[in-house]
Image (cartoon, rainbow, N blue to C red; front, side):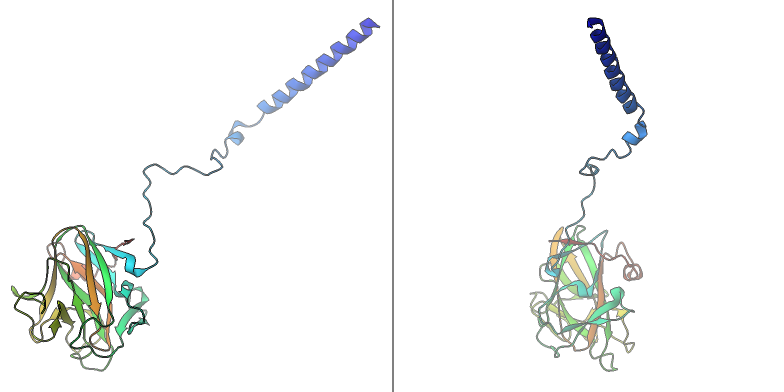
Length: 265
C-alpha cells in the first residue's frame, strides 16, 4: 500500500512539472516582433521636446496681430476689425484675393473721418520706413475721380506722411506742415486712386492734383494701430501692403501672394 501511494505521488509530481514547463515553453514561442508591434504607451507617442507650438487661434478680429516679416506686411482688407453694423459691405468675387472684398456703402463722409471705422494691429519686428499701398476699385458710377477714396490714419507711429520727389506733406492735426491739398483732418489722410480704369489696381496717394505716395515710419519693434474709415460711397478695397523700399520693388511687394501670419493678441 505504502509503495503504491508513493508511486502515485511521484507520478502526480512528474505530471505537474511537465505541465508547468510546457506553459513556459509556449510563452517563449511567441514572436518577439509581435510583442513590440505597438511600443506606444496608452497615452500615445511623446512629442519631441523641441516641437514648435501652433499659434493660438483668434475668434475675434480685434485680437488679430498681423506679423511683419522681412520688411513686408500683406493683409486681406476684410480681415480687419470692423465696427458692428458698419456700412462696409463684403462682396463675393472670385477675381478678388480670398474670393471677396469690402466696399463702403454708407453716405459720403468727405469732411469727417471716423465713420465705419476699421482697425488693424501691425506687429513690427523690423522697424524703419515703409511705403503703404492698397488695391482698390471704383464700383459706383463711371468717373475715376469719384467713389475713389477712403480715410487712413497711423496715429501712434513716429511719422506718417506723403512724399513726392523728396517733398513731404503731413496730415492736418498732426502738428506738422505742410499739409496736403484737399481733405485732411485729425491726423487722417484722404487716400485716393486716379484714372478711368475703374477695376482693382494698386495705388494709394494723397494731396489733390499733386499726388504724393504714402509712407509710415515705425521707430522701434512693437505693435502699431492702423485705422481706415469710409469716405466715398462705392470705393472698394481688396488688400493692402506695407514694405521697405530698400528690400522690395513695388512690383515685388504687390505681386506677393504670401499673406502675413496672424497671431493672437
